[in-house]
Image (cartoon, rainbow, N blue to C red; front, side, top):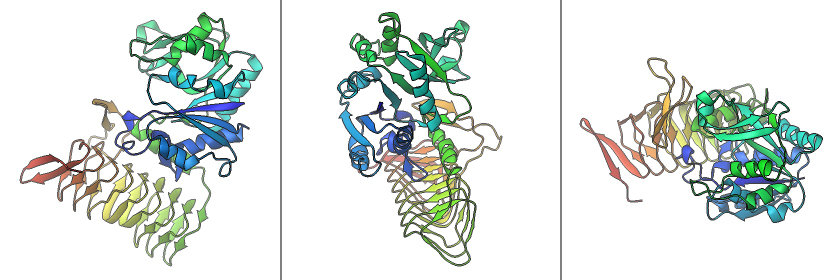
Length: 429
């Protein structure tokens, strides 16, 4: 069986994390999200993979290549230059698939490999035209809801139904297996009101017009995440790091304490007086300490510097510096970020209520009591900057010294406090 991975999207809800990086290439525990999917497919015996790419596609191609040597998986690519919907993207795979059945998945997933094998097994055992993976949601009005008949076959698909309709709570989890008949349904799919070719319409055509059957597979007690929102990355990071084993290849000086499972990459140095509590990941060529405190579930990329500072439950991408008296908690620091001495990030409200974050101009409840900040790539802060919980700093922005950041800062902005006023200026980058 072959696999098709949809990896063309921009990941707007993850901005500024995705401002310079395609969503499937976000590193978690030192490994791009998409690599976990490729390895999971290989684990269940799939070694022929087509990636439908688009936004920042060269980054994906450069990393994976044809992967015959690195992963022992053959990978090919098709670029979706016009983003006309999921059905449009899947349609590119027709020649690659031929007359065979194939596994289809979204490229922004992190899932237990057992889910992939269970979906394939369900397809083979039920002799159907498709299997769709499903997960239970508490707010069905925000999802496309799949209605199953008593035998477990898809009966209808309803986008964001009102609660009064009582159509259940099973939403699309983004892992499928289809026969080649799905391409006939795609060819008969019309543009939607959103001016896109919707894959949900293609599935309806397969069921209603072509009299095909799609079986539902409900994910239970297995890890799955679609990494749709920034804090999902923190959850995924916990899942990944909880499964690592210690592997220390770098240099650890005397008077360093390491507890739990910790990975330290080649040519990294942990200076004297540092204290690391696993599970943690530290990449290659990074400098930790002296006197750094790295707490559980921290992932630190390559070529980073963590000085006399504290990092807790956070993602720090490559080429970033947290050098002097900084606190980073429950946060995501993108690549090429430099924090001035004394920069602190708040991760808890005084009233202990859940922290909210603005996503696409809408304030979203993260469901988390502790959530810090998102700092976009190529940004920097001055000394003694304070960043309030749930705030985002856009790519290429500079925060002036002694400034309190209590709102989101746009991309490429000079943001500083002058007397009692906050000044925001567009940077000429």
